[in-house]
Length: 170
Image: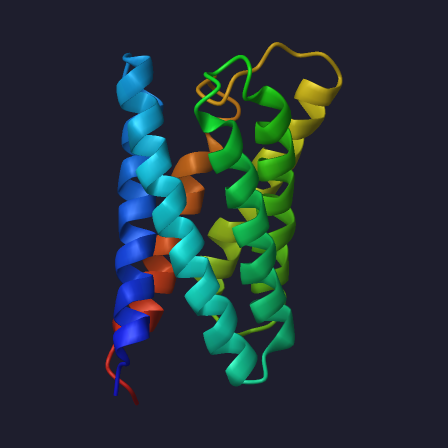
C-alpha cells in the first residue's frame, strides 16, 4: 500500500521536473526565478522524504544519494535569486552534487535499469558541464547544448522514481 509520504514525494518530483524545465525555457528572469524557486523547494521536500524512506528500508547508498541530491538542490536554490550570471558558482556546486547523487542512487539495483541509465547520462552531462565552467567556458544554467541537455534525462529519471513510488505493490 502506498503511503501518503510516497505520494507527497511523487508530487514534489513532478512539480520539480515540470517547473524546472519550464524555467529553463522562459525569457523573463523574474518568472524563471519564480519557477526555479518552486522547483527547488519541491525537490528538497521530495528528496528529504526519499532519504527517510530508503534509510528506513536499509538502503543506505540510495538514501545517501537522495540526501546528496537535496544538498545540491539547496545550493541551486540559494543562488537562484541572484540571476543567471551571478548564480553560476552555486550552480556548478549544485549540478556536481546532482551528478554524485544520481550515481549513488543508481549504483544499487533498487530502480529499473532504464531509470539508472537515464540518471547516469544526466550525471555525465552535468559533470561535463561543471568541468567546462570550471575551465572557463561561459556557460549559464540555460546554455545549450550543455548543460541544458542534461535536464531531460534528469526529468526522465524523476518520472521513473515517481512511477516506482506510485505503482501498485506486488
